[in-house]
Structures are given as C-alpha cells and as structure tokens.
Image 1 (tube, chains in turn green, red):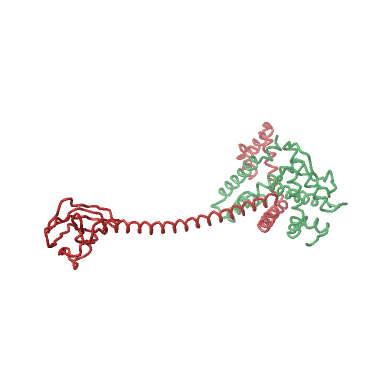
Image 2 (spheres, rainbow over the protein chains, first blue to last red):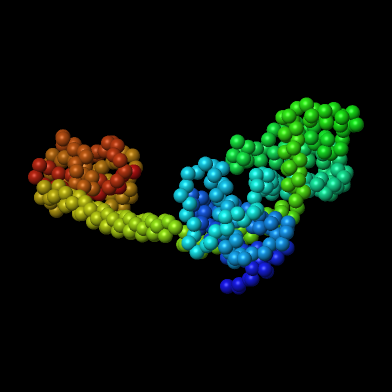
Length: 187
Length: 226
C-alpha cells in the first residue's frame, strides 16, 4: 500500500488530484464508515459525510495554508466527527458518542457554518440534475450569452435557452426544498 | 424555498427587465420581506453554482465512489457485518433445495418403478382372470368349424360381425364375449344359430368370442374391434 505524506495529501486535495483523492478514499473511507456506523449512521450517511469532509478540507486549504501539528488522519477524523456531530444535533438524535480510541480529537477543526451546509445541499442537487441542465446553468454562470447557449446545446433559439434555464432552476429549487437536511436547516 | 418569485428573479438575473421593471422589482424587494428572503436564497444558489472548483471536486469524488463501489462490491460483501450470516443462509437454502430435489427425483424414480411393477402385476392378473374364465368349460377339440369370420379374414373388425359355422350335432350353442381381462361383456342367454350377426357396439379393443354349451367350449376366436 502506497503511503503519501501529509503534505502531498493536502496539496493533492487542493489541486483536486485524482490519484490523491483515490488514495484518500481508499485509506480513510473505511475509518469514516466504521465511525458513522458505530454512531447511528448508515452506509449512505458514511458516503455523504466522507464527501462533505473532503470538500470541507478542500475549502479550508483553498482559503489559507493548512499546517497541521497532527497526522492528516487525525485531522480528517476530527472533521468527519465535527460534521457528524452537527448532523446528529440538527436531527436531535440523543446519542452516546463513541469515538475511535486511536484518535486524539481536535474539538474545533474550523471548517463549518450554516450557510456552507446549505451550499453543499445546493451543489449536491445541482450534480443530480441532467447533464443538459448542468450545462445550461454553468454556461449562464460563465456569462455565456443565451444565443450562444442555444447554438452550443442545439436549442431552437435564445428564448428556448431562457426557458430551459428557468426549468432547470425550478427543478433545482424543488429538489433542494424536498431535501430533509435542508428542511432541518430551515427549522 | 419558494418558486413563486422565480419568474421575476430569472427575468432580473437574465437582464431582461426594462429600467422601469428593475425599479419596480427593487421596490418590491424592499417592501416584501418574504420575497427579499427568497431572493437572497436565489442569490446563494447562484453563488453555489459559481463555485466550480467545489462542484468539480464533488463530481470527482462521486466518480471515485462509484468506481470503488463497483470494484470493492464483492470484497465488502464478505467483510460487512451480517453478510456472512446471509451467505450462510443462502448456502443452507441451496443445500436444502438440492436435497429436496434429490429426494423428489428418488421418489419419482421409485414411484415410476412401482408403477411399472404394478402395471405388470395388473397385466398378469388380467391374463390370469382371462385364463380362469376360459378354463371354466372344457375345450372341445372337434365338431365345430367357424366359416365366418374365417382365418383368412381380417383380425380387425369394424361394425356388425357376421358369424357362420357348422356343427356336427344339434348342440344349443351360446355365445360369450370376453374382454382382455376375462370379463364377460356380452352373453347370448339363448342358443344362437348360424348365421349370426353380432351387432353390439363395444369400445375398441381385443375381445374373445366364445361358442359353448353348458359344459364345453366349441370355439374361441379373438377379434380386434374398432
């Protein structure tokens, strides 16, 4: 099993290097899974929390340089733990938390707030849209004129591209509104 | 989040409002807190979509997850909590099924053998009954010649059957018809004389026509009636 240094992992996450991301999944997902299943979560929760944790680390290192005085594994475990604790608190789950013995906990890994939670929900549902919807919205965000969006995606014209963008946005909002996590955050 | 203001938000963000419409829209946002909150969230969604780096990372992580799930499916199955129990249960079901099927096959074979033996036994019994019936009367070896149906005519007969015979004395001949199990299906009750037409309809099969008096059998003829 290849061992990557803490620096390579952090830099790799920052660059979104696929090999490093695969390494992180292979090496740390089993730990996340074990921790979540032990603490009232499901396999699906473990997958979601793992993704949120990697995104949180990415956003942290993107903002400013991350220098750890512990192993990356310990840091990552603290991030996962923090995300999962927030989830359990939001869902008012009465729990007896069971930590994995071999980790020292960093109580405040400095990564999260409410708005970021919603942002993750918007982004997650955006990725669930159809490929065409994703393209329309991303092109709009890139300030591509509607005429060009229509030509690129083979639509009849500008008005149709506008209509498609509206429908995609509506679909995204409906998906987000139906998300149980989103409802919890709005309570 | 509500979509009731989406038309307005979209028109505004697409830059399709006239300057009057923009002024009116901005005034509405000031006056309507509900609409203002919805617009704020609409802006947050656009902001989230604008973070392409994070979207890209999330997409990559999804791909890795799917790829690893596919690759590791079998491995994880055996290492996952209760899956050994499920596997053991599945094996038990398969073994039980095999045993049950084997037993059914064995039973079927045995039953088939028994059926064949039974059929043979029944055939044997039928033959014995027929012999017993035929042996009821002593066989007379001479004195009657059956002319019709003659030996040269067909063994298979359809419809009415004409019997002609000669007999050397004035015996009162009776006719019995036996099936292949020795059961009497027809009895003339009264003496018959040549020529005699047998008109009774019988189901298809082999029948024995016996000519006798009250002591001896004069003639026995087997015919296949159709």
